[in-house]
Image (cartoon, one colour):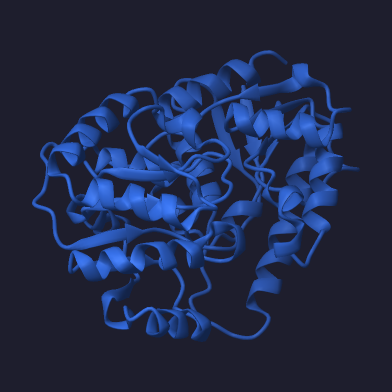
Length: 355
């Protein structure tokens, strides 16, 4: 059985939850099905370690219009492969509609979240919403990454056939740490910080704790904006907030040495950083919204993401209690056993084999 994955998620950003998901799916497919990639030009870092793909080449120079050229090359190549129909199933890796009038085989798509639909005010482009809705109608099978995501699909689009939606959880890419590292004086925040990520309220809530317990806040992701810098200064924590750009190996070490990891987002489809924290023996604090209780169970400390006081109290409760931190770490190790990319690939294979 040959599964064709198109180029979309691999031809743009080097890192991210969606590229990682497809990378791990392909990597763990051995003996389950034969994966192939359409497209001829990939930038994505994840693909460099996939030995069974040898078509990718890289333009190392940066120049204006490079992304447009890459996109065009990939689209032409993908359309050629899709039109040839020399595969059994197409699993599209994002929401572009470029192939819909060419495909003659079953179509599978993965819905990673419904954040654009639920938080319209944070997104200027509405194309993704329109495309996603069309694809859900056209797809033969829909993979949802959590029960919460499936419920959101049906709530927003009740006309979608519930029976073609299948929930398959993500896995964890980090190796489980074999010991608990000595903790350093910082709280960890991972990922983007705009809009529904709820970063500003979190910073307001955590500022007094940073000062009281002489801690830093370490953030990964994009450079701090001017508004963020002004907020840090206003709260008196400008010298306590650090921004780090790190590899996956170094990110794991950041988790391992953090007193705790905090995920204050108002909404996520799954939340891979939760599993990263569990694998790194890092106590995890989450908002009690969307998929978080479904994914993390009783292994974390929850808070109301819209309540400054509740966020503050939850963080202080964990920061001030090494015993609680150790208890959370052990529970996280147990919950983590539910998730693996191999299991994820096996569940996908079951869906593919229904055609």
